[in-house]
Amino acid sequence: MLEYESVLKDASPVEPNVATEPSDRAGIIYTTGTTGFPKGAVATREITMNRICTAAIELSFVPKDRYLQVFPMFHVGLYVALGVLFRGATLALMRDWDEETFCRIVQEEKINKTNLAPAVLNFALNWTKVVEYDLRTLTLLFYGAAPMPEATMKKAVKLLPDCKFIQAYGSSEAFTAVWLRPEEHAVALGGKVDSEQRMRSCGRQGALCMAKVVDKNGKDVKPGEVGEILLGGGTERDHRFLPAADGQLCKAKIH
Image (cartoon, rainbow, N blue to C red; front, side, top):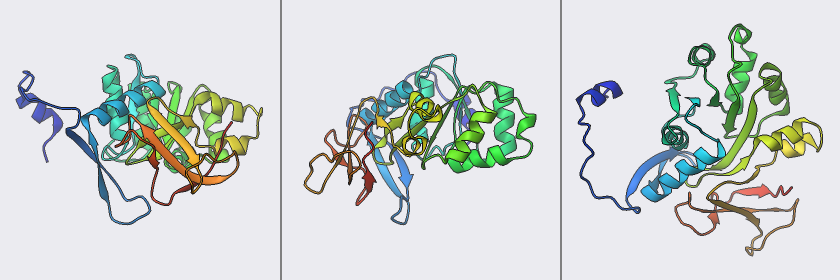
């Protein structure tokens, strides 16, 4: 294994003279899902660029942002990290997770945006020394992989009152096609709607993405009915609607 800085030092600054096509394979991310051994999901250059744009748009990246990447880079977190660089923002990486390192990096690097799975966020919130660190620079916390328990969300809001939250839903093959945006969290946490119902929602389809819930005949289901999620758009391996995952079912949550 080679260190990034050593590779960069020995590299030429000249752009490589290599012909590329939108259909060229650009990356492989790995998933076990619920089906067993890890498998690679291939993305073309076109799909990769679309995923980068989706992340940049939905997470509102701007050049002044300082983003801490916690999600593993062999998974969908790769596209989010590339979205940071795409907008000319600052990217910090964690090699391994531990609460102290996370809090120290946020404080020292003045991180304003980051990502944490709900379970990992819960570890940080329950760490007895978390209050000893200045985390007030955080303005956006992006989470995924599971719904956020209401108790965990309330703890996070208490610790980070100026931080907004956004959830992403999707799959390794389709990236994050559906987003529960900060304004939806604000409505739920403000008590204007049923908080539990809103926080359990996947959200709305994101930029360059399509999503719908259908019955076994492919027809749209009504709100509250159970159906299969179909995802499509510029971040999917095919621009048509395709199943989010084999046999995956979700209750429609349309607001």
